[in-house]
Length: 77
Image 1: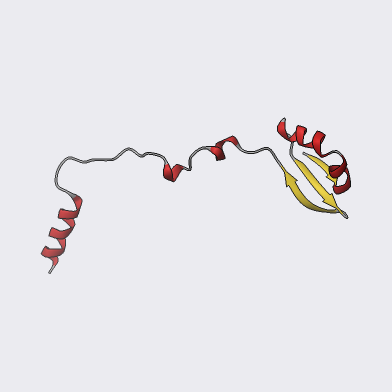
Image 2: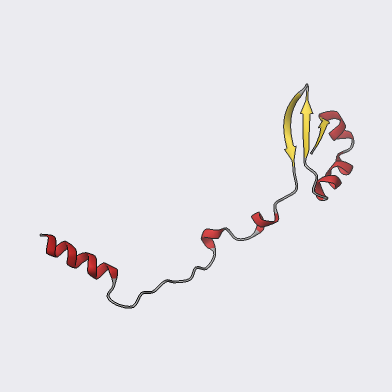
């Protein structure tokens, strides 16, 4: 991790962003306070979200679970 002032970042943005491309994380400080963190893009985040990926459909031999639930409700009354 590298820490640079805002002025230094502004003057050397191209070189600093090249460092980010190589995997470096940069914290930008202005008036002694951190104002930004610049880090490489996580390659995993560019993939499709897990909830959108195709799933394997699970099947169980026998009666449908919905039929079993309905029968249980009918028997309970």
